[in-house]
Length: 127
Ligand SMILES: [Zn+2]
Picture 1 (cartoon, rainbow, N blue to C red):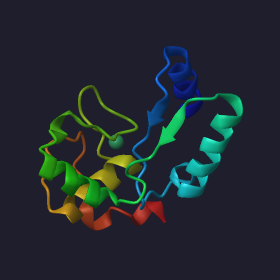
Picture 2: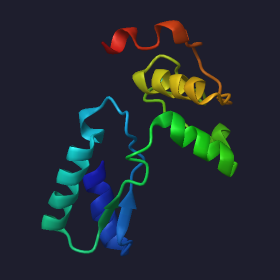
Picture 3: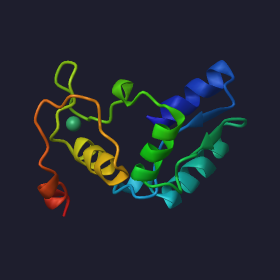
Picture 4: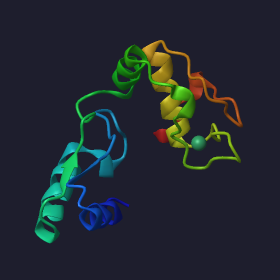
């Protein structure tokens, strides 16, 4: 996806792309070392397209607290990998991590979930 975004950024002369990876991501392709390597690879293929990772040193809960302070309408945000019509599934890793981060931040998550999430078991399946 980032390769396609990089190519599109070059095509339209955007000069950069931004991705919202956070410090506590569990995914290998969201780690700082991966972002650094990706940026280096982008510069080998294309000049003038920078990779921006403004949230890389913040946890998801910190991002939510910051967004809440800035008045972000979280009702128009989604994290789900498997949406059901207009609702987040409530079952995928991203939904579970989102709900846990809102809980940690002490901010109410305003979106509807197809399946309610049991926060007590939120990380059980992630190992
Ligand atoms: Zn989901």
